Length: 150
Image (cartoon, rainbow, N blue to C red; front, top):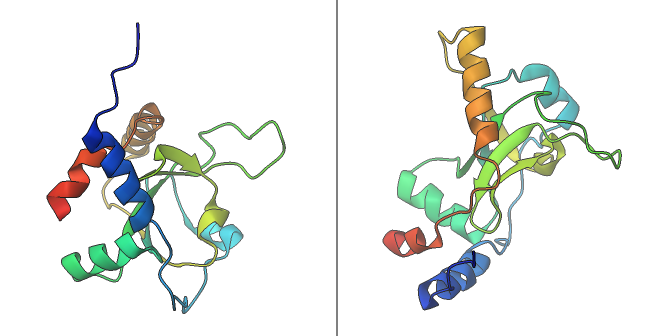
């Protein structure tokens, strides 16, 4: 089976996404996040809010009137450690360029972050949500939705 043909909107969306992911100038975190401290504080199922430093981050913060422009889902040790000995991915996030990916906590060591924890979740609930998110790894971001924001 062949892959569907790439449309003009797909190419345009990818180009626009790459431009929106360029870093903004002048970003200075107030309290950078230490990966080890985050790991000790986070529990599987927590959401890590991030104050991004990309051009799209400024747009999101303006439109939402929020300090936070990005969110990542903490899965703890649910994903295997990389065979090459690099840092274990403990967050799942969706980005314009990469889609749904697993990343290490150190990715956000130079960003302002905040931990959000849902109250009332049982350990089984947390396990279900973690499994659901792991099942979404590899999905691509629908770049056509960028035009809805414009």
